Amino acid sequence: MLTFDVNWVAIVVLIIINMGLGAMWYGPLFGKPWMEGVGIKMEDVEGSSMMPAYAVAILNSFLMAFIMANVIAWTGTVSIGGGLFLGLLMWLGFTGFSFGVNHAFEMRSLNLWFINSGMYLVGLLIMGAVLAIW
Image 1 (cartoon, rainbow, N blue to C red):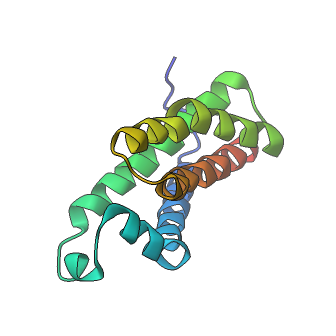
Image 2 (tube, rainbow, N blue to C red; image 1 turned 45 degrees about the horizontal axis):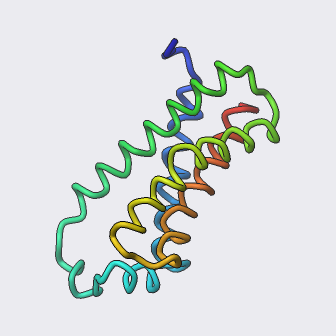
């Protein structure tokens, strides 16, 4: 059963961490190859409002952390290793290969799949580990 009796401080911290991860991931780490992969030029985004995209990203980060907190509670996971394993399972079952299907039908590159799904893998691993021990 879904519970709201979760560590809200950890969830807020994880939202901030996940947003920071996304900024680094799609900025200095993989920004250029990601933009090439999706066909966006810097001129396309300069001067445009990114607030709707950031609002969706914040909501997504919240939902990931909140659901992961529930999964951690349901399974009784209390170790970093267990949290990492649950993060990996969530990625395998719900995120990583869902991106793969989309990328395959959109005829996008494998490199773009690695960039997009990789960010979620790292985010879910961090969330699982932090929530398991906090």
